[in-house]
Amino acid sequence: MSASRTVFAALIAAAWLIAPAWAQAPAAWPTKTVRLVVGLPPGSGSDLLARGLAQRLTMQWGQSVVVENRPGASTIVANESVARAVPDGHTLVFAIDGGFTVNPHLYAKLPYDPIKDFAPITLITSFGTLLVATPSLPANSVAELIALAKAQPGKISYGSIGSGSQMHLLSAMLGNKAGIELLHVPYKGIPQMMTAVLTGEIQLTWVGVFSARPLVQAGRLKALGFGGVKRAPLMPEVPTLAELGYPQVEASVWYGLLAPAATPRPLIERIHADVLKLLQDPEFRDKEMLSKGYEPSGLGPDEFAALIVRETAARGVMVKISGARAE
Image (cartoon, rainbow, N blue to C red; front, side):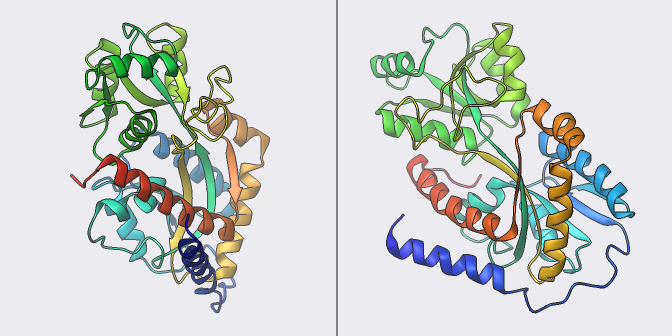
């Protein structure tokens, strides 16, 4: 990142942190049901983790915490609803990274400002995805894949769930850094994409470790590399793309909690402390997170705000390289 961009990011992060600091937290909170808004449909990974979190927070807070699914427009519908909500701590978004770090680069105008309209609370988890191949592809490593792609430019296809999706950005970055041409085939959703790679309709895609591991173990997919910061605990035998010489091919998915921008800072800190306590609880960690491939985080408001700013800049580079556009 350039010096000017670094300074800009620091100023934005500082503004994010200072803006709500003047406000005072209510003496009693929560006083009614807390809505946890999720931008994907029921049954998705983020939805299931949000429901586990909501169940435990209900017991901890003595008020119902309900998950409200508002899918649509790459999580824009959900994010906008929270940005416009009363900033009293009773409406939170269980955010997915792309809605904050990728959407600003895909859409000329969003109905919310990812920086100014939200107060970050905590990072719940961050995780990479596996680069997997259909078994019939004559490549068992990233090096073999690259050699094959160079011999057959534009012939090897990869699936994604749309322009600007994580699968699209990672594949485009790999193609750019390795000097290969891969064919992008977008699908309407993960089920269609998974069917395509399992049947050999496409050769490659990126999949979460929890979903991919049983398929790899059964020989239905081959794991070539991991697009995370470090190796996945559930599949430590798979090297990261950075280890293989491609450190730029990393785009971890993250889930986090954010509130409307004017939510009092003391309340933000209270929610963070309560969620951090839950993330450190052995039963919750094992049952809801580690067993499903999620490594608990618990970053505080300041660190989470800085992370979003950094990753927004990084995703901008990936979007430019990929040529992604809003669909």
